[in-house]
Length: 67
Image 1 (tube, rainbow, N blue to C red):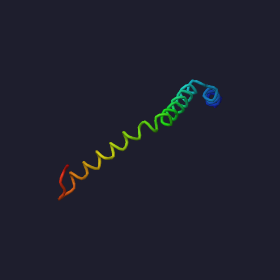
Image 2: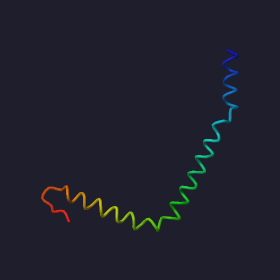
Image 3: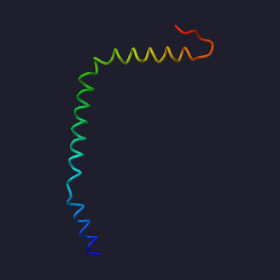
């Protein structure tokens, strides 16, 4: 039984996984900053992608003509 308690204490004191969490938080903050900074620049790209998707949907709709 003491081996189980010792392993549990060792597991609680182990900090090796904390680096992964820290890197994840750094990546999240950088990603949010990029989305905010490039938000206006990507608006045109999103609009043109929406137009492309709508054209493809129109082409696959029965009875419509592709343009």
